[in-house]
Image (tube, rainbow over all chains, first blue to last red; front, side, top):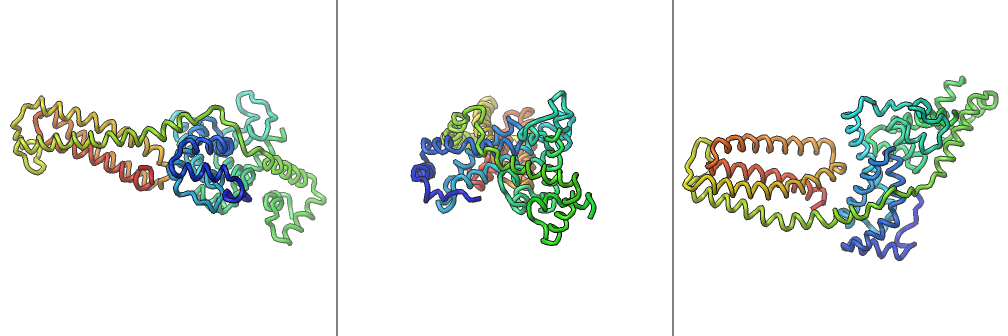
Length: 182
Length: 208
């Protein structure tokens, strides 16, 4: 996705990556500070829910710590971290959806559009409209149109076919057009 | 070419993913269809807005303290728990040996030479140690579930459920026969098996 190579761009970042890999938690904290906004953005939009996003952010950095020796200098650190974040956020959402299914009679795949929900104003900004999308449609829209993933990559992440990814994107864009035009 | 046909292909058109022939055909339809043209324009505006969204979103609170605590805690707890657990198991096995039992006797094959109270106390201590280790490992396992295939988690969960069910049966038998060292040994075997399963899973995903 066009991110700069870690080894050719920011010596401080590379140094912290090496130190963190060797077990230096202070260096890992600096990496956390540098990247938490990016990770949170991805997790928040993929999960569509603040608490699930928070869980996913924490889990992402824990996994990055546990697997720090697997990171190789020949690739961008942020891309590696975001790959972990995407998988984690998608799993976090699945757990959250199971929780909602136990304690709610509402089907997450048929959450009403914002204009119909409990007095929320009809005209919403894009972030709110994305949150209100059915889960799978939102995930595909975020990955494809916000993050720039290809349908083949999305299909792999979600465990679906590229055809399903395309149809969910179509669904998401249609719902967003309708929602944002009100 | 009608509107339904065009609207089904609107995404591929906007993304430039149609064949040259289809791209031209859709463009021709848009020249005279206001509704479809509007849908294309709205989609282009939507995509432009989506791509312009800031990638960074500031989190509502600082999660570093929780992350730092997790980085430090599990290894520390497990390091000092393992020797304690091993000691507890050795104590019980020694007790079972001292009572003259061999192998894994059936619950009714009592041959206890020592007082039940001593066995009960030793078992309670060992169970407490096991519970602490088990809780720590379960916490790690729950955190790692995201990285495991669903089928693998199902197998691990089923295995753990079987071990716990067996431990529950042995525990029930022990309540009726508290001095039975063979049952105590069986129970400790079940507890350590549960911990072994969790440890093996976590080693496999690189957590421990």
